[in-house]
Length: 154
Image (cartoon, rainbow, N blue to C red; front, side):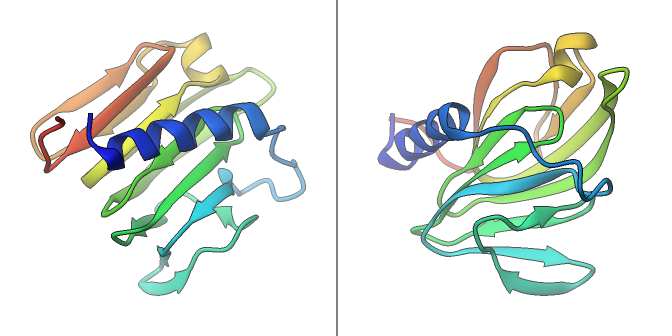
């Protein structure tokens, strides 16, 4: 297991234990940045800016981490996700009804590493979260998982 991969897993687990639910104050927000290390940028509507702790995320946002970057996100369905160094994650689609605990999400991991602990959406409907890479589509059935694109783990 590479150092970067271990960093992602550690960040994901830290995010899992340290997060409370996302506030419902901003109903169109799909999640919030809960942990941050190094350089991580957010692209929204073609505009790129540095990520800050507490930033809200929206459908179609793209997260990009630098060589020393990593971030942890808490989604509105209580799912936890982290990306490691040199990663790019497109939050293509995310819809969640918190009354019915139902929804659907699609994310595209273009490079780097991704770790997640699923939330209410996948608990209620396994396969409702799809993670795409250049080589595959993963329909997540539940629990936790790690994906690494573009590098071979040690």
